[in-house]
Length: 283
Image 1 (cartoon, rainbow, N blue to C red):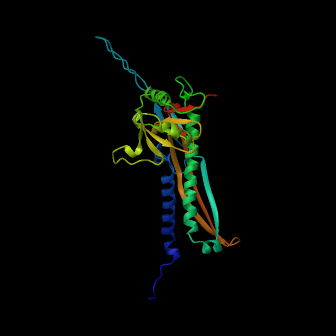
Image 2: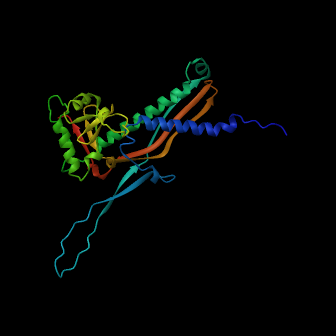
Image 3: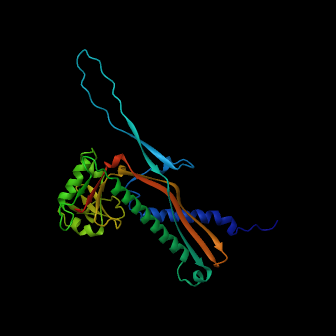
């Protein structure tokens, strides 16, 4: 019996799975928003174009008088919809000659950077959704900086945002304050700010987290410029119908390998935007 050789055909499936896993790992590591809002990917059925998340109000507590019957109450259900309509991709083509002459692994480096860019694209989309979806009905969750001249973040701004979340029966210790790099200096100057390096615990520090204010984690993100956000993890949800995948084929015309990294997902603000607060400059 002749020897059986294990070649590229036999290991290609394993190699592809490893590459896909690395791309997903890079995306998760680079995204700041993924761990901060709720993941509903487990509810996505094959072929689904959207998922619906039921929500309802609460019950009214009544008093029962002596010799009187108790009345049954009802709660009304509605649904938040996450449309799985974001199909995002990055492609690149590596010529054989260029890859052979490079001193680094061009494909691995490119895939890592493509995953990072997809992560930023995801974050940017979710941040825009949170800003657009914050409730403007009473009580208005879109408020202005106290400093109408310089638009610098101040302690009173933090207290105002925190109050609006507390009024919705949300524990502010579970919330996040997200700011842009231009407001980082102002946040660090607030007396009640606790630097992440001084937590004094073994709690993992999230990507972009610089500290805490009144129990709220403070995260810096380049996707924010003049505006700031306060939000609870349940303020928005996302779901992947196609996790990041890597595909490639050899392009004879270009004498190189064409690589594609793509993903399909959706994200939406939930609970009528009452779990997010937007701080914005004065018009």
